[in-house]
Image (cartoon, rainbow, N blue to C red):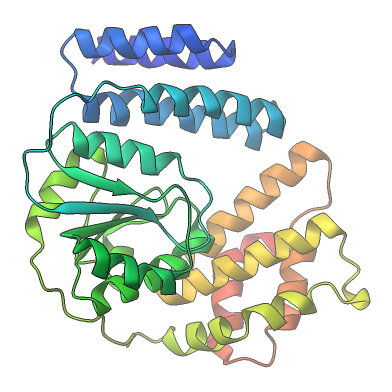
Length: 321
């Protein structure tokens, strides 16, 4: 464990100095020491990249610095040497949730699977869920993996799962926004905790997969209401009487998306986490507190089923005053 912690610290130090060669050398050293590619990705590269995100969130780094460090991580992952031919029949389609632009996880999933003998087809970014169906028919994929890093994109993950399972293709889901309980409501056939768990999850599903069923929990009515009206609700945040800055409107749209996800997953903690994140970022940037954004969102959802406003209030009650 001490060796893993030391290696992780070395990777973070390299990213802090934007040292691409040093970062790659530390990854290579970990592999030569006997760590597998999934272990390196889960225990070293993933935590180092989370550190990069925390630097931006705290205001210590700007967007350019975050992108520069992420590019170093991305290049290193892409250069991992996977020379062996696939040994496991059937292609795995590697994609992310509709709307999810944090695509580093796609490279991690693909390289992790290829290192274990799987044949992967990786989509380089998000696609509309409707465009997944013809691709699945063309590939006859054995399975689809869907990653989701941002909670506001969880409804997009469900749309991807619904499309995949419409073709009979099973879905394995993971990513920092997904939990085992959420994966069930999102329509996944299996949940993968991390890269090391992917093979187990893939081998646990069978073909064909049945279409996903309807939501039946108490918040599902609220999800269906907000999901059908997302564009008009988001537009309502920018009307003059809301008095929100352009940045605050964008934050309000993300709060709406996280509220939709909370209703979908029957989990107000999604709203709580988003409100806390926005509050921390606002404090770091010297901007107004998140309470004004929450009040604006409450106003635009006022005509919806009571469970919508109740979920927002329950999740963000400590930030509303």
